[in-house]
Length: 299
Image (cartoon, rainbow, N blue to C red; front, side):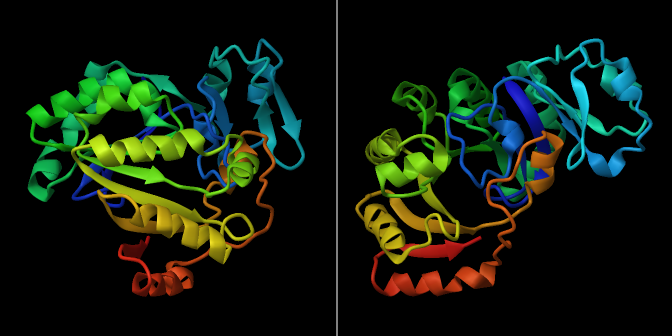
């Protein structure tokens, strides 16, 4: 299981106090992705410019010549040349270079999760698997979920839905809650925005609606200029209303919190200078509750 971040004592990724485990690798490449370091399966080195002192030791140390200076992004690592020897990380006194993607066994991850067990049990919390796309690691999710349930924790998975159905079937019985994203109703538009069409995603959501025993929430990242048109929102709500198990949908306002990560990976940010939205900016969407028989929230 390849992990790029573990966030302890989280209260935003499900009920109670939780540990959120972010897994590396995703089959989508959403233009607005807040975790660009999650997209590739391979480990990467993320440069944090605010920590860099400009000493140049990383350049001098790298045996592969993979590090170069970019005038906009700083000391960037060329992933095609980097051998992940980590010599540049050891040489950086300022901790400006961070590996994104560490391998864990189920047992190693459980050792981390158990540290906050008292909080889970006291608050009705547990573990959330996010990403990237966690269901690409279905065997590991299943094993961790079984162990979590034995200890009285609940398990939540955040998924984009773009995974083989076999993966979902393997892990579904041991998951309590699923947050599934929905980006756009149009196959063509979905392809343009994320790199893949939405057929597999919609099919998987329908399967979950008929077969998943836990709770399902559909989430809609509200991105101006991408999926904010009235027809897109109404088609989403019509789809959600057609499902038996989905009682609530969540709209997620666009934000720019991942901008520095793009810079740290030497990547351009496709959303340009578009400003972040606030929760209050999307409150008008709750008016749709008058038309559709489904609860609408904004987070």
